[in-house]
Length: 554
Ligand code: F6P
Image (cartoon, rainbow, N blue to C red):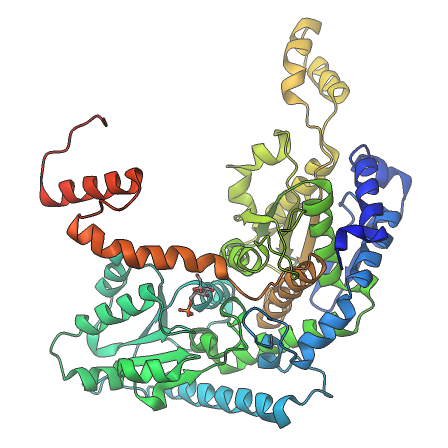
């Protein structure tokens, strides 16, 4: 099926032309019930999508497109464990990790669920032992610090969650993260640690990722000759992987290898043993609550009618902007300090999933696919890039995310924070017309000429759309639901755009080239490279070897 030939698709293209001439101000003025009608109250949060450039007609057509794209079948197939990740021949079952499958689904005679439960059981036992001081280094001292060595999905999810749930920490084991092969990061972390009381978690789905394995080898060297290599690996190293064989080859004791499976995508893996650092930081019960929160969102996604389904609506709105309205970027703006890593986490989740241009039919997509996701803490962004959001000619739809309950007890702060969040979405929506600006300036006593000269710079066109997700409270359950909301949003968008969301071939090319360039950097012999690359390698070599480098190129 060529999706662009569907009547719903073509009607949406026409509606987008009309909608570009409408203003959010007018949509609100025309419907006193808009705020209430275009929002959903779920157990963990209020999802307000009323400040979006859509009306009932657009929403009806978007929902029709979802039906025409067979969303229901794809959703059923995903939860049933069908191999919907066809380019890798795998099912997509991260929902199974949190018990989020329908009761009727028994995959492989119950094997999937029992594998999940048994690995969770091992995790629980290990975490409790660690918390009770029962995990010791090779000199017999209890482990006090755990360093996660992993990158991408083996890093971003766990660290983002731990940062988000700082207020829910249990025990006093400190958790650190090293993701970068730039030795500066590992060196910085090691400086704070004691070999006798440190444990490394080598987190890698494939256990072949150069960055992670290089860090693991350097971590092993850091112990020096304190004990034999076998003893150090036995007492100070744990692995989390879908490739246990490779972890054993590295020398990690099988009892300390925690497993997950190839049906869990790296960027969807925080619910698996990859979440070990989370369970260490917030306790196993906290980790369970995170899983339960996500399972609640799985249920909502499976059962709610499409028009009341939060991930479906989010996906449709994102698709509306990116594909039909021509707004290619989307900002994630948390107004909650604890969520400071959420934009980085969602960048991988969304862009590694839907940043593609080949359709399921193997053809070049003739339409825009997933958005460019970016953002940072809203308050900091206000003093950095919001100028662009408000007054550049581009339209960047945004998600504002906040929490009703503060994560601290300092009086006065939270109201300022949330007032800013509300003010920004309102300012983006309404803008300020030249007439308003002129009367404000005149009221301040400016002359007519002064008003005319200054007013154009102060105009805000407005009409910049946003969602607001207002959590009741940020806790393990609501965070689980929030992450799963985005996961399903990404899935829905991929299904409708006919993209395979669960592979990531685009990250492989650079990996292969880096492997070939590494020896050339060392040898300096890069004559077979393009002239830019060979020049850069030559410069590198001359600086490294102390040969004088001339200021000008040529
Ligand atoms: O960057 C590409 C990627 O393959 C991601 O998909 C993945 O999360 C990351 O590398 C790390 O991979 P691994 O967990 O196998 O080390």
